[in-house]
Image 1 (cartoon, protein in one colour):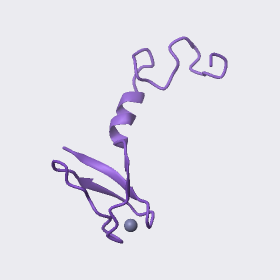
Image 2 (cartoon, protein in one colour):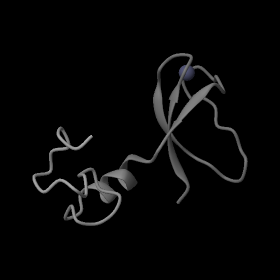
Image 3 (tube, protein in one colour):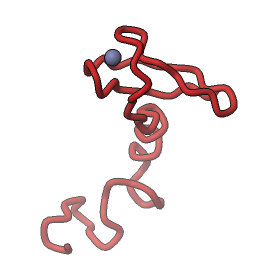
Image 4 (cartoon, helix red, strand yellow):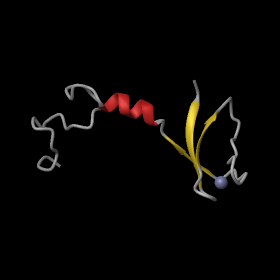
Length: 72
Ligand SMILES: [Zn+2]
């Protein structure tokens, strides 16, 4: 489902909108089309909550302890 999170730059209102094609959503609060589109939060959470050995996780691959303070 093409559901995206947006934050209105005009009033700061956060909302979700269904994007169909190239439709441009408007802020439901102030009607502004000036929106900041966010990455879908549920997708990034799913990717980062893995076992840590896969790709795309938040842990560094070369760091056994899970802390990247020493390897960057
Ligand atoms: Zn707004």
